[in-house]
Length: 182
Image (cartoon, rainbow, N blue to C red; front, side):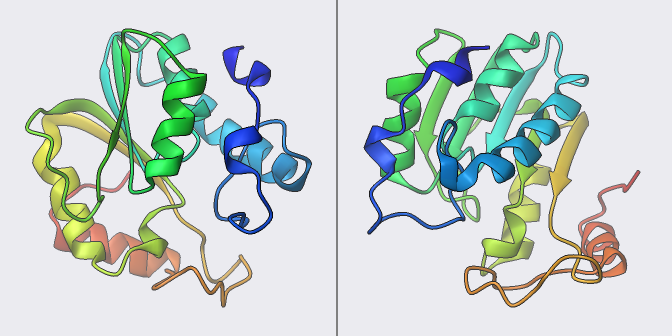
């Protein structure tokens, strides 16, 4: 796959690095990379011939996986200019686009068949805004594939997380936005 050949040069300095940004081929994040890759491989079974938004795409390898798995178009968004530059450098494809966007206030005016967002919502101050934005840009028959740490089973107190959820809290957040949970 394409994501195995990329460099980590542009985002690997110790001063800028945290374990919240997963980089392929970086010894510091190899296990997180494997964990995240599995999420994208799971999501890829729902993206064949679909338009996909990868919200908080990070370093872009997941967006590339979704495109390689048959999506017709993938748009990856992230709030980091550095991450978007990295994505554009490492994943050039006419059907793969990267944009600097805030997940709490997405400015895209298109709708998507599938939206994926892995390990994002817990980082956001305004989680309801994020869910409202997803609902706005997701087609009526669209699929939202999301993951977040479960505080009942995952170590908490991450300084980068604003609000972590238990499974029941996460389901309640979905219900409030009138999204279905399967």
